[in-house]
Length: 271
Length: 280
Image (cartoon, rainbow over all chains, first blue to last red; front, side, top):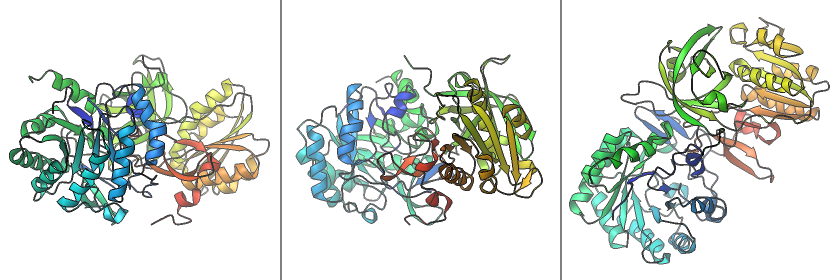
């Protein structure tokens, strides 16, 4: 799979899209990725939700989102009306929910692809379907895939477990994934002792290793790299390691123009 | 293409750093932000060295003044209270230093259409953001009175400016070093006479008192609520503010985007001030 403008935001780091639109940087990105949408609304975790740590952020937002219904009514139409290439990230509490999400999003207009979040740090503790075993991640992916029209790309977002990353990538690919997003936040601890996920340059080497290993073992599989990319050189390192596109997460929180700037820089690179 | 109210991401230049009591006043050349400013908005600032970038959360600071024209072009003013890593770094900036910032961000104070009686209640450094508000209210022929509070004299901001900005000024400090000894909650009832709208900026405890007193006296309140905002731009959902929506449903909204200015009676103060524990 080829990406014309291989830079997008990472799920959960782009708001609803409108905020980046207001800053005038949404259109310069290759695509927009939503925060993870669940079937039912989720209020999210109480404060504090995000803590700064050297070269990273630890976060425990708790998948706050308005639920599929409100997303379809209030958020997707705005993105669709301005023809933003939109990947909807989804997370489910059961295989049935993953199937529902796939079926209903498969009928919604204006979606470029689906990103199945099978790597929420502490997902089971949050009531999500337990996808820690590769075959379970594959089942979640297959459940979403089953409801979608053929041809709509589906990606699986995997966690930074470098020991099992190839095995998990192979399992979701066999279940119908068109590609993988590598990687989600690493399980970490908030300063107050509650569970969270670590993102940012602190995990960049872990992410690069995952991209490298998956590309070596599964060279046909499309990889979107994510994990601590701060600038164009970082993005190039992921592309060199085998990614076809990159996602910008933490850096976008630090400077909301980052993804647009990297996208513009990469336009000048030889294909 | 872009409407002039949309925020900008710019590199600002520090023009003046002044020590005022416990605070530092920073004046920055920040093209575009001054022109878009409305009272109650803020900027999100990057802190620390930019190569390599190791501090990735941003710091939100109230815009406490703007000058759309001047020898350095449009400027904005910020007040910093050095404390943590970010505020200490900002307080140590010198003339000519460059700072990355995004703004103006957030929902501003709503200004009344009619000339009404307005009480502006400010606490600590947050009082700074009330002065440009007072100016715009006076331009609408509103009556402006002020109540300023702080723990002590070094933390009292704008007591002199307030004499120019407001028809009547009351000052309270916790230690009694300036004005009367006491808290905003103690002083509020005595200054509510005839007030239609109360505008507040300060600590959660202080703003809770503003909201409660306004409600008690049948006045509207709008408060600028400060919670840590990792991005300030609405992207991260890190700045959860517990509110009750227009529909009566409790929810967590983004302080940076759905606030920072919000109607006082919409905030679930008990959860913010810790007087009642929220969900674990």
